[in-house]
Length: 433
Image 1: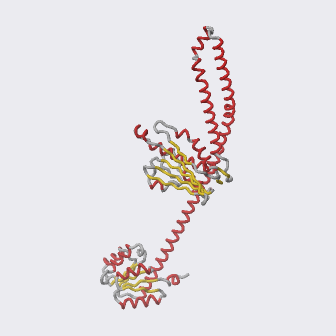
Image 2: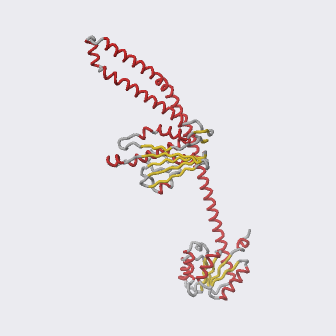
């Protein structure tokens, strides 16, 4: 395709207060197959440019009212018209005025009296330059968009690889630990009942002997006093009860480990969300306790009636872990450099609410804390890969990015964050049933 063909549909605005100049120029322009628009003053030129969007403007310098220089300034100050090429037509031979025209944004100038051949040649040149500029800008924009999309796809692929590797390694490790500690826990738990019976029998025997032999030998009396038999008989059953509670706690942890790291990467299964949240809280229980420089974090749960949902339980549990652990980190940071009075007066609370929408066929999980929240500039970037506000070694910036991918890409759900600086943060997760 030739340059002539490319330039034919062009519209050119002629601005001159001399009707004869307009007539001569419009005939020459129409002779090239272009469309001529005309204005006799600066105000009407600006108005026409805004609604007609000509491809080029031939602008006379000396006009009543707005002169060419002021008209050009206004055109270049307007976002709508600033990229349209302007060529000055001037009878001035002073180089200063020509430089002034170029400085305020004109691309060229034509000196009157003009030759039609020169005018047409310059118009063709600048129309071609304008066309090439637009084509180049469009190509750059398209290429930039392609590169941006490729970068985004690469980041998503990296996150998927990291997620798969983390879940595979974590699942094997945690499930292995849960399995390994389950056997000895079962053994100890089973023997506890026997120990409790044996201890009861021995204490009953000692008590009976004391009744039947009220005056024991001196050595026996000394030993009874030395071991404080009365306190021992009172405290030993309590110790056994505490041991049983500890074993039950270990059993719960073992179950939570296996629930948390479900080996279900390959396919979705039916799962009760509350089991995942409870197992996550069980694993984080040690971090929720009073830490000395930070009071206990109270977890309040408002569970609705949720149906089983088809999902990847291990991955959802990882999302719950990331969000709740971040809330705990926020409370840890909140109490740094605070007085004991301020720390004691603060009510650290994480509230977890669940509900289902039968009509929309969705379940919603809301996890909210009352720590210090986030400023808007941080909130806008929390789901970006590698973005973190934590110091080096404390966080990778991948937790929430992976959480976003798990909810949105893996489960076709939504995850949103709303935070008010100084008041707290709320994450809302919506999943299809």
